[in-house]
Image 1 (spheres, helix red, strand yellow):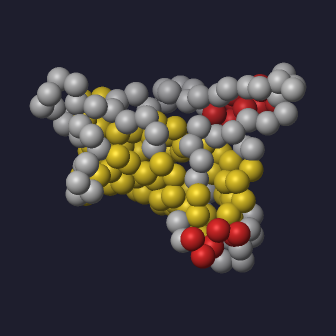
Image 2 (cartoon, rainbow, N blue to C red):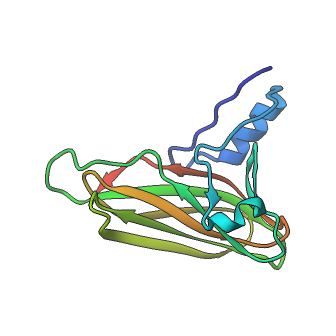
Image 3 (cartoon, rainbow, N blue to C red):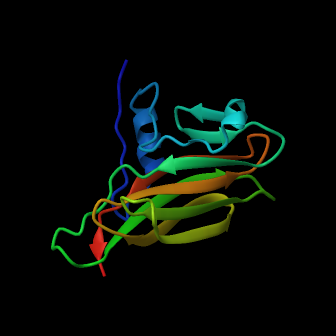
Length: 162
């Protein structure tokens, strides 16, 4: 069995192209850099975590939450850090996916958010929000029903200082 690794770190890179190349090279599976889970525990059976992404199997739209695992720090000790993520997915004709990037400080206080609405077809989106030292972040997405949309990948981007 061959194991592959794909990662998006810049706006010029495309997760789906890397995943296609890995499949062409004979890799059996490849897991997303961020694993999205059901937002509501009662809906756990509705969310299908595929080797290539996450989709909703229920006949109603469902939320998934995706942790951002690589966060920036404000290593210069005083600037405002920015957390940035790239989203990669697909929504069938007439369906949309909407996602919001949220960041919180170590006390759980809200720092910032930004959203991408009505993503459709084969899409890539870039989101960024204010972050800080010891902050955490997640992406909350609303997936369309009946497997008609999939989140392929959510990756943290290199940090930037405002």
